[in-house]
Length: 421
Image (cartoon, rainbow, N blue to C red; front, side):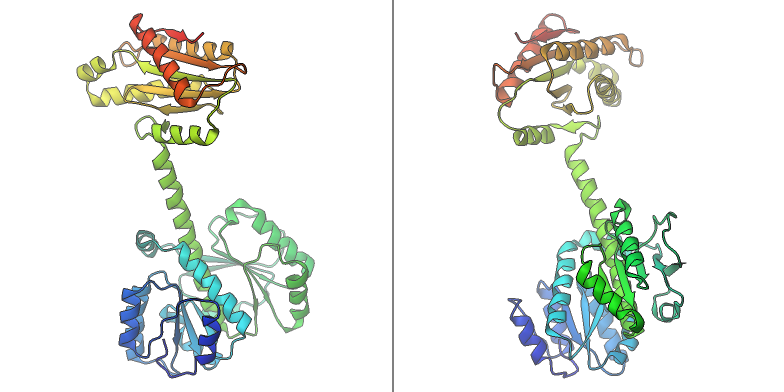
């Protein structure tokens, strides 16, 4: 939006060459209407020379509407940015920005926007109270940071490298270029540590080390740094960029954690903590239609309905967990176990002979029978389908065979193992 009547025509033309849809606003009211009704990836707003109460009120509403949408301030000169560091702007550009720099900046912000299009994540993130933590390396003077960085940011200063101290709570690394070799070693070592996967690593340089910075950009583009900043840039702009990078880093970690939990919940049976039927079937579809040198074991708890009726659901669930943990003790880590029905488990074993599959089934059956569960007798019936290199069965066929032999074991009185010929 262009509230301050800056000439944004050049910027608009250059953006239109790459981005299909640009929305323009000439007033505060129009901007709020567009943002509240349209899907926006990035907001560019021209900033006044002096911060006013009207502008601050507008920006308070704008920040709430934008949620995780990046906001970029366009300024007539970089000194103007100092007034707006504390209003929530993610980055600043001056009106004369280079075309390539503009495109690179906008594309990066669009990618960030795409990662965080999640209102629940947004609410989770902004209710967090943990302070941000920045690790600075190879700096002698940090006064430029202390003047401009937000109050909830802790700064740890490390003057030497290598450092193997615990950095588990770091949100951003700021490395000052004084030596090409040390900078590259420091940056690449940090990035190789798994814990730093989502953490921004920013390189900085002053006038005396500008040639070193150029050398790193040209000769070492893949050492893992996120961005490279000139320390002669207005401190307010540097601080705004660092604050935004730390914010989005924490949001991305929250997003990744939420995704991991969602995947886990979608795959795991909540009662027994083994895989559920949906995951098992999806896995086997991806595994392939033909099975060789493999075995399917179908395990059913004997007289489980009677146990459920006599002792109740809570007791029955405890028994299911006991059976699942017992089974896991006798199978390999590479074997796949899932809860296939109410009281039925299924195991897929790959690369096993008929002898081994038979031994595993017998051990499971005997272990359950020997263990008295809370003064209640508990036994299982096991059906086994073995597939050797001479035959090929589809998954559905192998499961049907194993299921058939499990019912044969049940008809024989239960507490038994029946194996396909």
